[in-house]
Amino acid sequence: MSDISSRKADHLDLCATGDVGFRSTSTLLECVRFVHDSLPEVAVDALDTSVRVVGKKLRAPIVIAGMTGGTERAQRINRELASIAEERGYGFGLGSQRAILKKPETLPTYQVRDVAPTTLLLGNIGGVQAAQMSTEAVRDLAASVGADGICLHLNPAQEIAQPEGDRDFRGVLDAFGRLCRDLPIPVVAKETGCGLSAHVGRRLASVGIRHVDVSGAGGTSWVAVEAERAQGALRAIGDRFREWGIPTGASVALVAPLAFQTIIATGGIKNGVDVASAIALGATAGGLARPVLQAFEKGGRAGAVAFLTQVEAEIRTVMLLTGSRTVDDLRRAPRVLVGELAEWVRQARE
Image 1 (cartoon, rainbow, N blue to C red):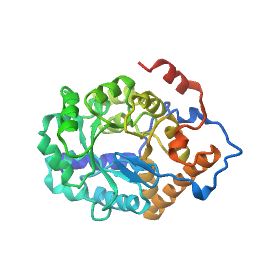
Image 2 (image 1 turned 60 degrees about the vertical axis):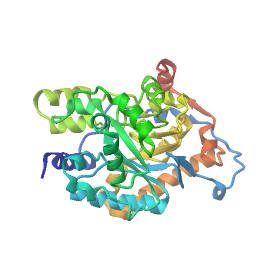
Image 3 (image 1 turned 60 degrees about the horizontal axis):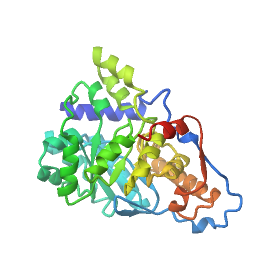
Image 4 (image 1 turned 90 degrees about the vertical axis):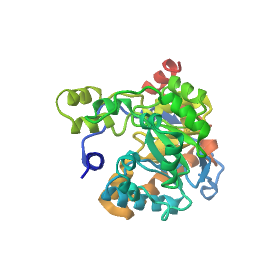
């Protein structure tokens, strides 16, 4: 197995069964308290959970977030989960496609269009890699999987702890501007577990980015994932910085005033109440990765479907109990922010 394929396999194993979550840092979504509406005046059957994400309509505000690719096992996971997204009207994200650049024979592990012909499909490549690639090369990478949009992921904390990681992060903002201007599909700025600040959001918006995935702290710590793979000084760095990042709830709240067309809230989203709470803070949809993978690994396709059915039911329940007929109504529903989240919102706007 090649080095990059071996790394992808390690990532899958660690995310499925390893101790790689944030330990003391939460998403802070528990700090969103909805104001209960005991007179909702809406029928459950009339609730409309549809949203538009990266320009495409979804039946529910759910994206099965990018996780994997590059190995035979990843191929099975991508195809099964993408077919679920197709059946249920969700979005679906691929893991980093960097493996294709190094080993073109891994391309089939990312190809899911035959089982998900109408699904919102998001490709994925690192911002550092994109800065080193021509616009045509990025376009071809996205086209090779039939992507509706391409995520450029930002992961400096993960890279610093990774034995094979990047160390030069210059030119990434310029690459966002170039690709946003010249690609025929939307560009999504995606963090990988450390969140987007208001300052970064403004810089992205200034070069034309209209779609972001905050991927905040509180779920899988990719720094912890890399620490498990590292030794010596790098492992010590990973252990020290495994709690680093902006909690997902705080990140959504901080970038929401910037008027992005799409804000996907990933990073520790584990149930429908989390999705609804993120929407109330300004998100367009919630992205779930590790809990979907774990449900799939434990119970196969049926297990993943059962988990996602529960997530949807919980979103609809929050909508009912806040009198929200649509997801837009839920975004405007009365809520109170308490505890640490309220402090993030108060202190970190700038």
